[in-house]
Image (cartoon, rainbow, N blue to C red):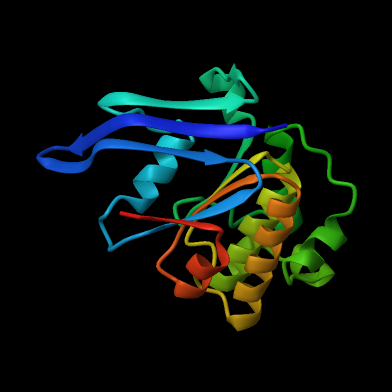
Length: 204
């Protein structure tokens, strides 16, 4: 498995605001790339383009497995995303949320307790309704969902948001582990520690 995401001459505008004008770049497996820039520079938008959740006005965004170009539907099955806009279900427990989102991708979870432990949640936390969760606990649960899906491409938008120092260290550890497993990691961040931990930095 050798994934690549290739941007070629990408142009995108929202109304009169130009977000990208001829962006050409490439991302590959086994690397974490930090996308950095001021608020409104297009960090989250770049992740949406990379995931084919959004299409450019001009130019192309293509994904490859080796030399094979992946169709959009096939590629989307290879992606896991974490974003502030990701909605969890407050009236389901954390375990039920995890099973639900993993089930959407036909991902079997052999050890839910172990998965929670990796992100700093407990067995008791898994039985709580997500509506009782703090913002930091919700962020940990979102990462647990990413881990459960075990996708080839991770699109992480501010992954350390709302986490304490231990939580941010855990995120960096999981990113490093994923890179070692040859996953392709893109993270939009303004956290200098997260940016420094990435092998590559793309400044917008």
